[in-house]
Image 1 (cartoon, rainbow, N blue to C red):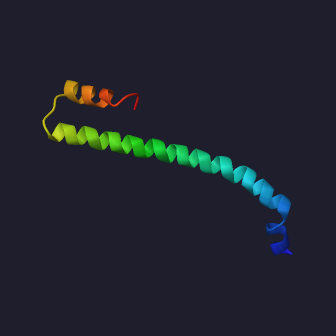
Image 2: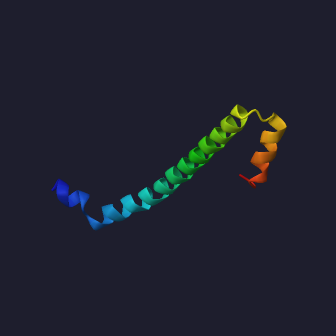
Image 3: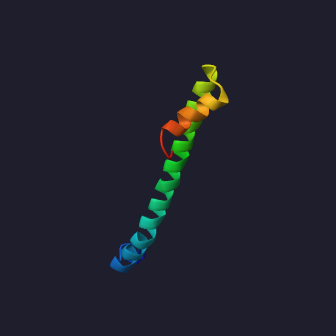
Length: 66
């Protein structure tokens, strides 16, 4: 009985209706976190090279909207 409930076509459709937007939201925030991590790593690397804050800002802004 439980297996019939889980694999019922209506239940699969409802689960898919919730799973697709949730996966899209998770992917969006994962991408944003990855981008922020890469940006922080770039800033650390530039600071270790001895660049000033103005030079780092110019490099970051040269990449576009980021």
